[in-house]
Each structure stands twice: as C-alpha cells, then as structure tokens.
Picture 1: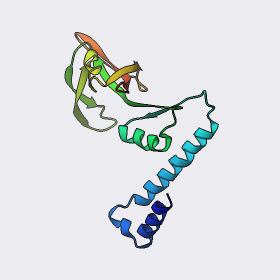
Picture 2: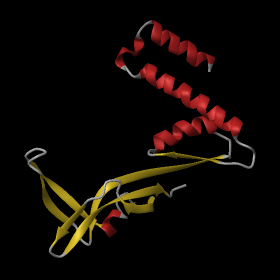
Picture 3: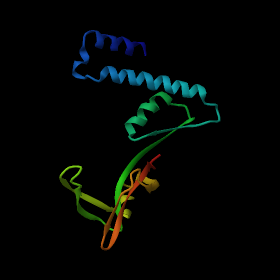
Picture 4: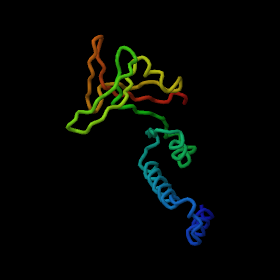
Length: 157
C-alpha cells in the first residue's frame, strides 16, 4: 500500500491527473470505503453477517476488494425501477402536460406487467413490487394503468 501512496503523491505533485480530473475524488472515496469496511469488520461478531447491496457489479467489486476472504460478508446486486406505468397490455400513448405547468406533450410507454418481470433477463428476479412513491393512474376504455415500483435482485451468486 505504501507504493500506491507514493505513486499517488507523484501524480498529484506533477499534476499528472489533469487527464483524469476525478482522480483525487476517486482516491478519497476509496480511502473512505476502506475505513468504513474496517469499522464494519471490527463491529461484526464471528456469528454475524453483513449484506452489501449495490446497483452494479463494479460497485460490488470495490467492496469485495476490501472484504476478500472474510465470509461474514455477502453481496447482492439490485436494480430499482420506480414510477413505471403498467397495465394489462403494452400501450404507447401521448401524455400532455397541463398548460398551467407548461405547453408540451411526449410519447409514453405503458408496459404489460408480465413484460416487466423479464426486463433484466434470467439473472434477475423481482423481489418487491408495490405502488410507486408517486402514485399515478391512467384510464382507458379497456382498462387502466397504474404507477408501480419493482426491485430486481441478481440471482447469479
């Protein structure tokens, strides 16, 4: 680790990070993650486990780097879709914004609820589904659409 610090000092001293402006923030974030995980390790008893949740595999890999070999840590990748309009069938509509907000309209896809379950492929499964954080409904002659949220968890572990 000492070599990494010396290399970083040279990078900062000679401004070699100009091509990568977020380099110093990345180094600070990694130090923070390392300190945080050290605190977690110290707080966990041998019979306790810590579940690390992230939205991407890259985020999980950052945490795994500091927890390698410690079987008290489990990992899960998840994706949250909130405020997704679903109905009994797929629809493409035009939504018009009320004039008192501003004059506009835009295309809107309403998804078949069963279609949503396959969005992310076989590696993900829906672990939670309910009304959205902001409720919204659209009515049609042959049914209605409602705004829902879905939490998908990666099942490839």
